[in-house]
Image: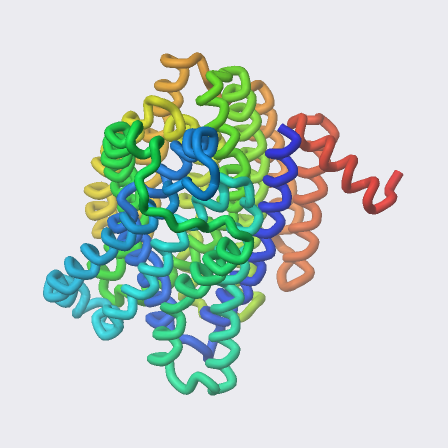
Amino acid sequence: MSTIRRQSIISSIVIYVGFAIGMLNVYFFTKEGLFAEDQYGLTGVFIAISLAMQAFAAFGMPSFVYKFYPYYNYHLPDKKNDMLSWALLVSIIGFIIVMIGGWLLKDVVVKKYNTNAPELVNYYYWIFPMAFGLTIYTILEAYTQIIKKPVLTNFLREVEWRLFTTVLIVLFIFHVIKDFSLFIKLYALGYPAIALTLLIYLVYSKKLRINFSPSKVTRRYLKKIISFCVFVYSGTLVFTLSQVFDTMVIASVLDGGLEKAAIFTLAQTMTSIIQAPQRGIVAASIAHLSQAWKDKNISMLQKIYQRSSLNLLLFAAGIYLLIALNYTEAIVTLNLKPAYLLGFTAFVVLGLTKVVDLGTGLNAQIIGTSNYWRFELFCGIILLAFTLPLTYIFVKKFDILGPPMATLISTIIYNTIRIIFLWKKFKLQPFTKETIYTLFIALISYVICYFTFRNMHGFAGLILRSLAFVLLYGGSIIAFNLSPDVKPVWNSLKNRLRLK
């Protein structure tokens, strides 16, 4: 657990550095006088469609890498390991199919988006290089994480990609990039840039070996690999669609689609800060989960499951309530466009969804690396069956609040099913009494800080309200020793800072 804890902490720090850069980008995107709402909304729609394309093109290859790497690594020397080569080839073929489909379906896209999001139609083909870079990066990322280099992949995805965007924004502000047309075209090259960086690292460190000669592992497990990838691909596809469908529907259905998408994108961006620790813990844990299943080490799985649930809940609840305390005040104080105030209720519901999701731990990763990975497809179909129709119905009835409501309902059902499954099959469950204590402390800390500082505005209000919440909530966590991973981190921090 110490290795997972160390890598999770480092990864989380890297991710939050990335989010700090991302917040700077958001500030420029939403500040008066720089970018129009539809321009910022277009960047969010670009990412949503790129994620959907990547899900179609990857054919389950990242999950194949996570699941079967221990077998390839155990039975083969490096020079005969053909796993990564096949994963890249299959994904490239998958993306070619996606490109052909995208070309054939352009008329459908034009019909759907031309009225409410015409800018998307104008730059439609520039989504493809962005999606291709994301597809290749996702495969290389899975491989780099499984060889236990999660910090690097988190740095590239969370920091380098956002720095790339920051550079483009600065060049745009100073008119080196003279118009938005050139900006969005260069923006589409962000994911190809980080894919190329990771590829260069793997080649330079001699971790990338291209070998298309089928190994004994590939031949022996081929039927299992194909069966696994078909099921996981289907599950990943429906899950990804459920995650990006909201932005795509908002842009196509609502009047002023890209402007509404911009407001929703800001709420989503703030929500993604809540999810940041999950990325670090997943990246650090995935190799250990895969190995634990191979070794049939159920006690290790239970330990990772409960620790991940509690630690993620501690982070998620604290970050969610901290942002909720300051969301509207920050928009006013930082002189962002008043239209973005409309996204607060969407953030509240989206943020609650993330707290529910993170608080249930790594159930998706535990199931996905087990022999019951087919169950993920079942869960994904249920998620999609609820999310898609509810999103479409709610967006027409509740505007941009509709998709968050649909997502919250679907996520609760989705995670409940997985929790019940893991308990019935393996007697694994994520919760402890500390789960209840965490929720209680978080709520009390929020109420105290809200009523104490609700009449304090400006930067002073933002700083004092945030500082009070962090001290009250964080201090309570340390004082009551809610997680066995908190005290070692706190003691290490005190030693480094030479505090008594």
